Length: 118
Image (cartoon, rainbow, N blue to C red; front, side, top):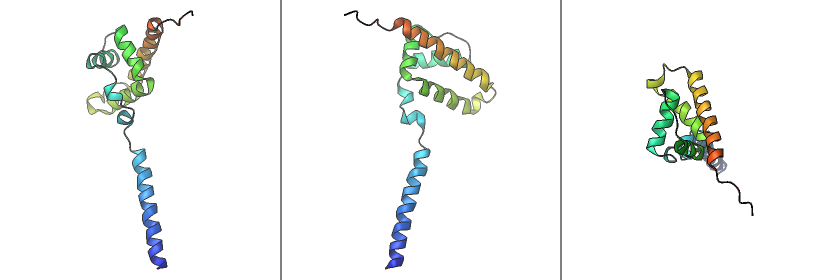
């Protein structure tokens, strides 16, 4: 009977440990719903401004800020892991991503409604 209890405890510990390991393997893009927070038009616009050349319009900046900096950074890093982008200079791309983010935070401040004086 004691050996049965040892097996039960071992089984419970194994299940708990596998749950912890699975928690570490959660895709942050899916966990934070990053893929659905921007329109396709704005995704393309932001992508081109970071990975190619282009500008981000004020409307797309507002969407980018709505996406959040965490999702913005994770999506850039995930794109850099794609073999199609292996020849890009990572530090340049991350720098461009930061520049786009900073520009958009300024645009968002300009566009945000003023607090009511009442």
